[in-house]
Image 1: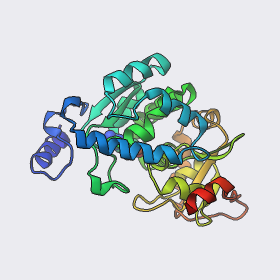
Image 2: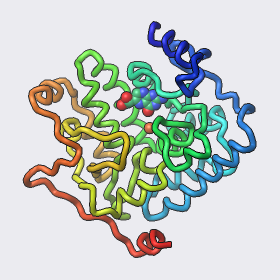
Image 3: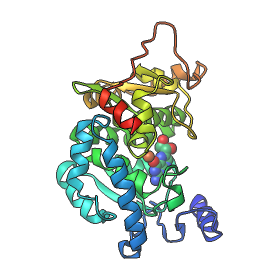
Image 4: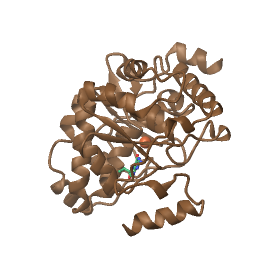
Length: 296
Ligand code: HBI
Ligand code: FE
């Protein structure tokens, strides 16, 4: 309650982007779709269509197919309409939030198949980079995969795990798991190396960098290794973790994390650019089409 009050004061003082004055205990607000201006719809279209052009051959196919079904290309989507589509596919709904909400609230929403989507859109000058998640990051990056049953099951399990982690001092480990999968995860499937993380898929630069640059490490996903690894929030990732399928992600994160937290608490965290002896560093994906497009 005190946290909400402090946020309301900060938002009243203009320190925060979101209007927390109207948020309820779950930090849910109205989307107020009519308040978006034509300029904002035009910015949305520019962001969407720039990103859409970069997806073929880089984003996981299931992401591309799911995004198309949401029909959100021409105007900022209405959350209640999108919720109807998701509800039928996987039982997920969107909730409008003023911005980042406390971990406990965030996990609480995921645990009940509600995905928090920020209501405000970045400014034109923030076209290429924005520090905190905005409507475009949350919607374009996170929402499409909510219609994939296995991914949807994983995200709900993640939310439930988060609520349990609160009492076990497990939050830092879960935040790293979230960061290296939901936000910046790669998948190696029959199509090749592809991106499925929202932070990558909503970024103009990182979607190219994460697959074709020789700088970052690309390490096969292993739960405890991911939970040990620090991450950076202000630059491209030094390391990406690669799953073989969403089924693997779901299965690998099903065990009870309690003993894992106990083990990890005894180990030092690993710097983001670590490659341990014997670890596989998967090769970059330098398909000709990409190189041609990158040069274009
Ligand atoms: N709040 N609205 C919002 N969106 C997020 O992605 C989010 C959050 N609060 C906390 C959070 N993510 C991270 O700490 C997760 O690791 C829990
Ligand atoms: Fe995100």
